[in-house]
Image (tube, rainbow, N blue to C red; front, side, top):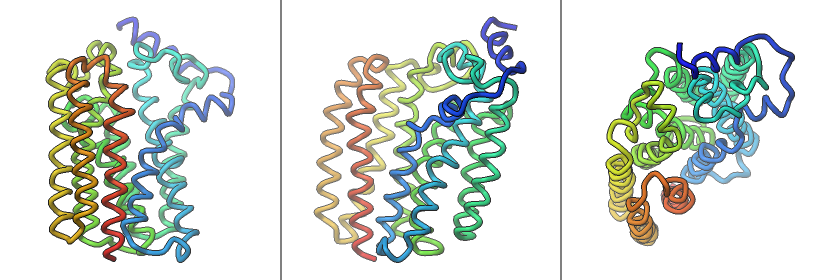
Length: 304
């Protein structure tokens, strides 16, 4: 057993009940924003006035952020406790602040609560939540552990964080299956999010390499992985521009097109030092990307 493994397993020994702030840290509130943003894009893209279904809107935001996303973080931290002992030893589980099997318990309880809330909203939302939770578990569990793949891991995250939550937002508002235009947009932005998730893997290269996780930064190297991420982010956005133009939304298409040009400038700087500038790109290029999501949602919502 490696040193990392020994550290990871020490974290599951019994200890006092964790403090509320440590349980909150396990749920990583900072990660709730992306799915909640995508959820709001889904709400806007539906074209349904917010005042008509605001109770469902509030329930959906709770579902997208603290419940499903928070649960997925607990699942990931539980099964990644050995990797975190290398990359982030201060995390609640490897540090011992969330001892024993509390991490697993939070993951299971969060899953059940998420399903209960989704069932109370609508059957189609329950179906989306089931799929989202399934992806969260198989992403991290020892088998099939999608996280170990540089292709399927980012794909699962991108689809769950962007596509499913966008779908949920639109479904909550219309009370059923969203329009085909909405489905096309959420699928394209989910594809582009694959590149965002690849860049997110740069922070864990050392631990992933030691634990045999074949992320693209590990298998291809930082330079090649960054190029793949940039292409993956750019191409779906170009397809969005084309669709918006066909749908009679030239202004929205133009705004997103300008955003792509701005991202290309940021990408050029990223590619000069991928490992060092991946966090910087998250605050520039990725922000531009998600703003484009809202622009597209506003455009389609106006057609409803």
